Length: 453
Image (cartoon, rainbow, N blue to C red; front, side, top):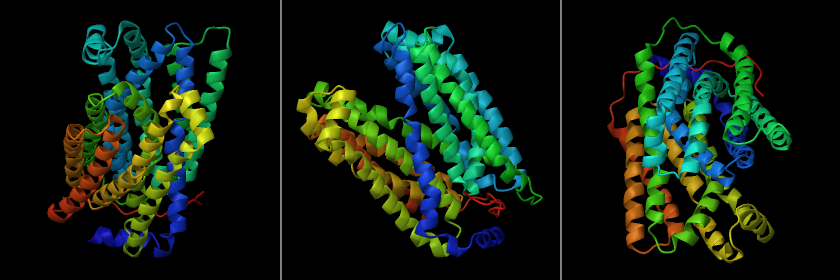
């Protein structure tokens, strides 16, 4: 109760308005959406090397595995949002981030041992020899990325906690611009700077730049963090983060599950390319919708603003769901789906139908993220884990029934994702009411001492 009272005094009710929430959330959304822009640039560098388009597939498969490994440490970010509010908590969180980066890099290095790599890439993932070579090169060269991603976490959480999301987006925008410049240099250079190796280099250098920029931007806030005299135990933060990490591992499996059912529906050679082309647009805005959880964690302590926060989550999810529909406008549809994605003009009706069926995905993800943020603030990570476990179960069940009822492959994902997000959100809310509050002492919210931009 003491800490709750302290937290409530640090944020004025007047700050929790649609305007202040939009000012905080929009840079986060832009950051999430913008990050997806760098992949086509990196893929272009890979495709121009020996192996051609097989390099793109290898790069994509290795990236999936890379981010699956990274999901093991995903909970460290949320833990930083909770425990990084004081100088003592930040120091412990920073050390944990350091050791997490070393651990994840070591895991990826073990997977890169040739016999293990062949088992994972060639046997389990079933990649052809040329794709396996490209994926192995990508996975090997990108080992440092795991460390960089983990080291970036404490700086990013500090910026988020102090509502300096505009600064965080500035660093990401610099990363995108640098990736664009390097991709152009690598592709036009006479030095043959192409292929999977140079594609990873093109990706890594800008991410290092982004991390350094965030570090410099976060330092003034870090120096002003309050000292409360209590240092949280590392195991306290790790146990809190572990629940979220396990949940992220669950969520990362959903794409594979949907794909396995959709590929068994009629005419997968037509429906699957359309579904994956369309879902790639919705994935970008859906990732932006997950940032609602960080918004809730930051603003939820103000009781009078909670209704506004809930309405904002609903509005943001609805708006994000409409953005990809821009690409069903005839001339944009022909340019992107036919020109860029190389789909057939006969697929246009299928593209439109798939796009309309996915319109509620960002909304349901935003509301699930709202529930997750609320549970995180109330120190109930098990409620989130329950929701995420149910999410994976509902993905499997709903995909199975959709396939059994003869639903087209391009529609299975829309049904499964929408239904599963709704059920997961409800389970989290239900679990919050049932679960006994864990004994985790949350430090007070730091009062921003630097003008926010």
